[in-house]
Amino acid sequence: GVEATAAGASMRRAGVEAEGGLARMSSGGARALESMKGLGALLAGGAIFFGVEKIVEKGNEYNDSMQKFLEVTRASGAQMASAGREAQALGADMKLPSANASEAADAMVDLAKAGLSAQDAIVAARGTIQLAAAARTDVATAAQIEGDIMDQFSLKSAEAAHVADVLANTSNSASGQLMDIYYAMKYVGPIAHSMGVSIQDAATAVGLLGKSGIIGETA
Image 1 (cartoon, one colour):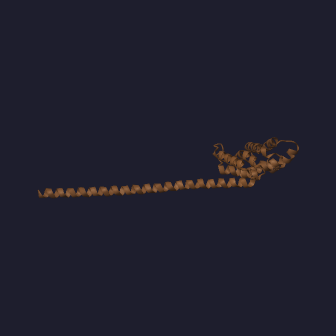
Image 2 (cartoon, rainbow, N blue to C red):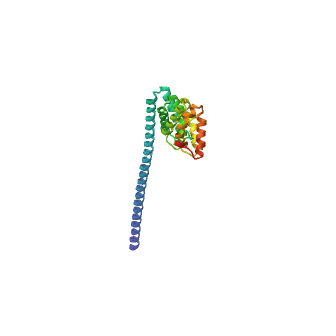
Image 3 (cartoon, rainbow, N blue to C red):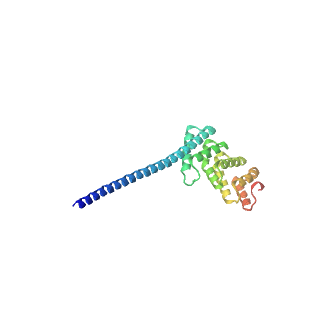
């Protein structure tokens, strides 16, 4: 009887200790889980903050570009609203994956610096972005080349979009780079214009020279 009672007491103590151990394990596991949740929340919060920070940065760049457009063109309120809508539309256009709204606004600024009016710069921005993508160059360079060639052929700013299309097509079909085509057109343009040759025909001729390996300043 005494031994049985002692054995029972020992088993009860063992049971209590086991329950205590399980409780401690459960508590420790819960704390670890909470720590992991906290770490996850911290990492997620950091990722969200980083994402928000990038969005704010892009928003600031866009606002800066639009302010530059206003300063360069002295655009009216209606023209600024139109420029904003077009920049946002170009930035969201899946056919122009290389551009965002800020870069679209930059294209308008660069075109305006090349001599285009506010309205013509808005209309021509798409073609300039496409030209930059086709030629694997930046928008500012594409806009400058576009403006220079328009001057050589005495073209009106309203024809900027057509000029961008012609240059992009020539760049795609010729073996030379856009700068090679630009240098060739720099020499050919004034002469071709004086002879009544269109920019389309002049660019086609330069493209054919490019396919023959004769292009650039030697064309």
